[in-house]
Length: 314
Image (cartoon, rainbow, N blue to C red; front, side, top):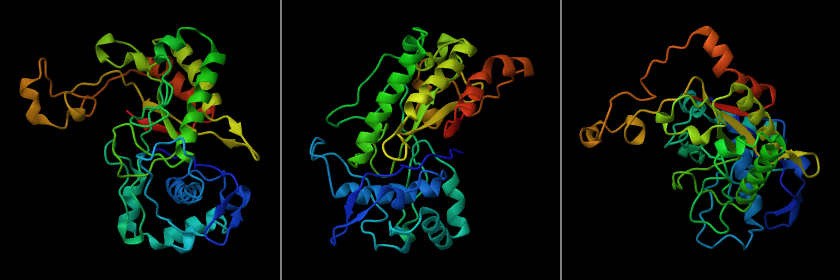
């Protein structure tokens, strides 16, 4: 379960046709952290940003669906009400059987929409290991060296600087309404919870070791602390974080398995060389207490102590 960071206060922008202004400190709170708060705030942000679309983003850029196309679309869309009150208004309209699916996030499908009240689907997967993964947009996000190469510099100031710049670009695309996701799908909202792989690199056959800081628990812990400092840097009046950091994959994860779409498509395995029915979704990893404490937990302890806003399970 990823308890995520809300988008944060927006700049003062015109709202609606009456040209009234919504001050950041009045409209959007930086204190809330739950999924539904993020959904509400994203939609308010989408409405605000639509009034000042940045022309640097190409016209074919996809703009996120909105549960609040106008401030009067639903009672909870009124940006002049306190965020906590708006969340409570929304929660009262959601039925128990609709609320339960909102606290999970399928990798491909995200959290489902509640069409009955106009709440769009949402997806927390926003990869940012060495730059924001997104495609077909201009300007393109900056791609930095793979994590294991950057970590090899042992330069915590560099880790922080890259994290901050990548989060600044994520914030930019969010502010202008661009939501194309890592898997090139458009059907859901996305916010500013950025995913980073901090697992231990134990075996090259994993195939994802380049995403991680490496094999040293101490270095991984130092890396994530410095990266969070950059990604969640406070900016603007009131100190709004650029984005939120989510640490993955908790825990003892250094095996992918396969093949195809996370081992879901059993019909394709017969012609994949070296195919296996074993994957990260059905492997039972046996880790003794000492190895868990010495090897696998330090990076995630650092993640928590440093104030990350979420974690993806393995």
